[in-house]
View 1 (cartoon, one colour):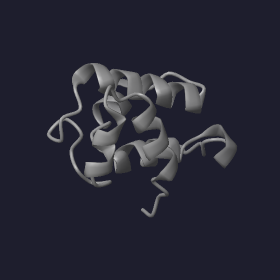
View 2 (cartoon, one colour):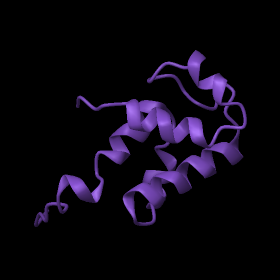
View 3 (cartoon, one colour):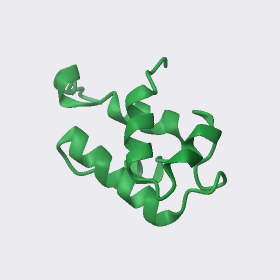
View 4 (cartoon, one colour):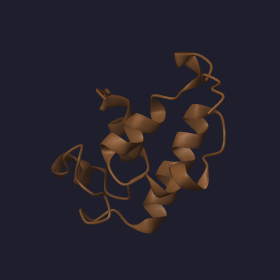
Length: 88
């Protein structure tokens, strides 16, 4: 899935104690292994909730591991249309 990571980088950068750290992290790199702490991850999750205008599920929270994972989550924003309803 091709996603634009620019917005995700903006959101992650906003919630880092040391925003310059993000300049050294690739989109696919694990944030915690790169030096992002758990408190910062929680703030990123809250930023995602604000952007999406809804709480994140436990599964979504557990998937916030990289800039790309944040971008994939943000791709579900309300302005991209209502979620499709499937019978599955």
